Image 1 (cartoon, one colour):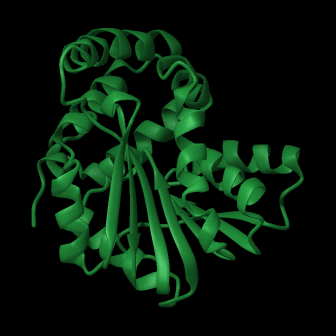
Image 2 (image 1 turned 180 degrees about the vertical axis):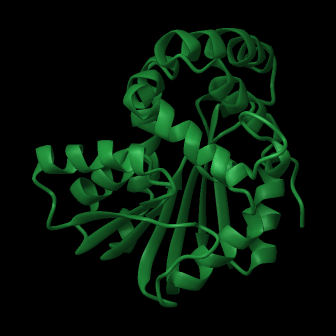
Length: 245
């Protein structure tokens, strides 16, 4: 199934989305964490805690963090869930290099590792993780169904998928306020901080095009996940999904 978000690209329509996303994140990696915290008013940390804490009762020991970026979710999982291992994967080496520095500062090298992976062709054997997580990255996938199917494949039976993704508020006045903020303030802020206005205009477009709420729930079930639960956070600016294999 094709999704509108798959055709939204950062820079041009000629190159593949995957290669452009990798280039974009390599470019903005040094400013990424600062922009996230500033643009979300620090709420990104709260959303990650909500996502990780939703997995606590399952006590996952082997965790795969897809689209790990600079590793914030992987670090939080290691600290709050105390697993045996967390592997963060991404197509941007620049982002993961920032993550490796964080892991070294936190002295968590024995628990967290990073490796370059295409989320549509994961190199791991089937059924080798208790949990798969992704925060604010799945809207960048070039082939969403294929990537979700890969996450399902590497999960053990009874394992859980936890997704966090930015979403559009559904009710006034937050819906209108978010539109103004995401279309006017965020691209300007991104340009000033990272020097790449296109990257943050792309961010807004990808949020609007991504399947949300009930549509995402049906997508996960169609891929093969069993029970799917989801919850809007902070007036619908972020949505948390939990799905079971």
